[in-house]
Length: 204
Image (spheres, rainbow, N blue to C red):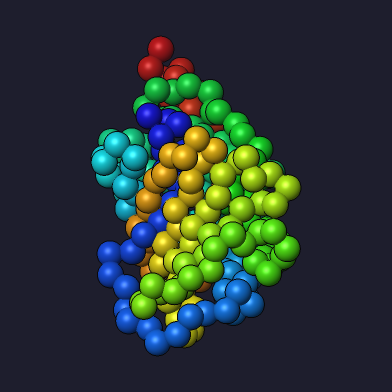
């Protein structure tokens, strides 16, 4: 289930998309992503097995994102300091860790997003309502790809779908992203491990 949640953090779709008149350029989309410095919102995640999870997302670029899952999952997925940590609070196990640069999520968490970079974008299309960009790290195509859906103007992120190296997909529905400043402690894994250890002792 934890790995499913990790894959599920790698995707986003919206409940409804406003009609738009034109395709957004890669430069417009890159400029928009670079404005997402410190934002929060809610998400509804559609897992590969059809189950649904909900929670709160906090993004602090560069390199940081926090997914807090509501009960019954109560999981935490945290990207910080170049790693992605998955903490299953129900099981109380030690967090699993993965290099951030081995996930397509690193593309939108980069310090400077440049989708025009050679080899990064493998698809750039318009479906009549939204611009869809498919991208992957040109140096690590085996780590999967990310599909981003935007409406505009102004540009807004409506969906991302991350496809892992085995072809698995997960979808997450984003609410509105609002600007908000966060204490850096929210993106540190050590306090979360300390909380987990305290709960273990109380259970013992």
